[in-house]
Image (cartoon, rainbow, N blue to C red; front, side, top):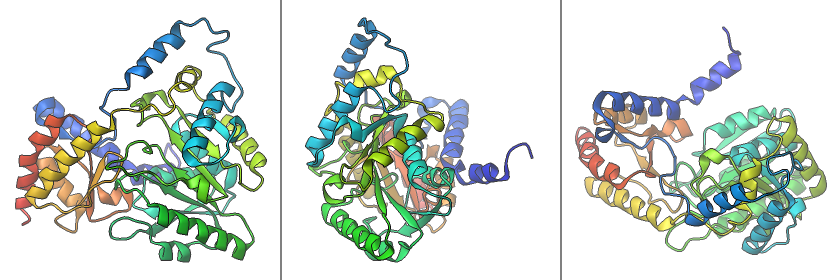
Length: 393
């Protein structure tokens, strides 16, 4: 075999989203773009804010010395200062530029911080359903992923988390708002998780870090707020990106923020800066760093996504589908009408509707619908959703 056995196995495990995207692409070639309803990818379709475009033009046109050159591997100081000030205000903590490392998106940030923290054989505890690539990021760092089921409504099961955490645990990795469920973990459960980690750290005589992946932090509905991780958990780290909040996923710009209360915080930050370089990221894109420095607290029109959520949820509910209405992000994790979610996704493909099986997210019996699409895609897909469900009524 030309490639490693491990990577071949990983390709098989991670194939669902890509497979469904390719299935949609083939159907579009066969039937035309308008007659295929593709909900496979979480690719934002709401336009970036006008302010983003204005600042981008300004940065491109300004005569900035060494505009495209190397910078400190942690990122431009003025950008890190802006991120630190925004997070300090939002989280109710005190951060400086030295607590921030700019990264190539949230994926880059996760690889960097896991490489920094995880030793060979360490475990990373992850609630399910989860974004499938977490497992590979953990493996990149030499660790192993330990998956823990959530409650029926996808909230954290603190008893299960407590049972899963052991002397091998180095990190608990959460994602809220969650991909694929749209669940926002509430302040009570985050506070209880922080207390659990303090107790387990005391029992095992080691630090257990909480890493919170928050690229959908600004996309929440109905007045909800994402709890302040840094304010309630001492040994906590946030990773995030501007991909979803500004609709610029292709620009690969994100950050990691190390809580100032992290034990040996300076060593963690220095390690992350080194890992940013040796993993090959080196530093986050310079142009985008300069742009987002002026875009803290700026985000896309979240009302657009709320409207799309309600358009989809109201339509599917009227047909008889069962689900928990998403509280954030732009995904609906609906229950499959049959136990075999892969088979039901195949039924939807017969209707030229492209979704992703929940099994791909360690959530069998469900399927994911990414509703960051045009309204007409949602509206015109309803008849196909109706026919697919009727076949299993």
